[in-house]
Length: 397
Image (tube, rainbow, N blue to C red; front, side):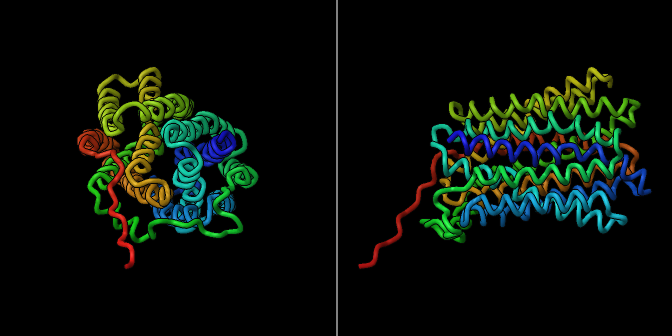
């Protein structure tokens, strides 16, 4: 359905476009407030953890009552969190607004909810491709929004820029009307063959589900560390803030192609092999970036390569979950897989700030990202993609 795909892509464009630029606020906020980088990084780490935790419950709600109500609530909380991020005078309030509120908002306005709608409404033969299109929309949002956010910070200041984004996040409300699902009329839950408990027990006992979660942990660690800390890393090395803005925008631009290609290939090739390749290629790209002499050109080349690999795991991983377990509880199961992703995100962004403050360098975390990429490549290879065999329940005599 064209409407579902367009509206889902629009929601992800806004939600992911805003959050991909948060690294640009690290130095303006810490310098203005007199905070350490660890303080900012810890709040963003909480945001990622809250995103993953609330994503499980947002997925359950979307599976049971439809995505429409979840998206409306998520948009309103997003606006509140961004305004609070701008106006928080203490690290505690900053962690509650930039961390908990925005994390909860992202849970209700991003992939787990949108992929659930796509999985239920589109033909399975086009599911991986459609998820790739939605993920590409998130990348387009990054390409579109990161330079805009950098321009707003330099033009009107970091606080006013956040308030502008707060208003922009409310665009999700009218778009959500295009994602109302026929099976969820008047808030009535759709009929399921499995209960939530049965679906969870089945998934967590299945080794391939555990492997997908392990790989997604690494994905979160790598991309959130790079997305939040690379602007400061480049500035520490003497490069201008514009290089960082262009680098993040290039990641978004090339990830449009990367996610689309990955989603399309997921219809034709073994998804486990695609995932293994992506994680191994990330490890190689990071190692080459650290080895090569640092210059604006090396940053742009690295950003383009990482962009092709950035969110390309998202459609392939979620399509694999749908292929194994079906779509009845897809938003919830995607939420659990994504929670693992966000635990990795928490570790990546928090360790980046912590180890920088302790050592004055990001080197340890860069090398951790390389080692984890090799691990994720290996752990995805044994994944079994075929639909799980369920024994029908015994009928009463």
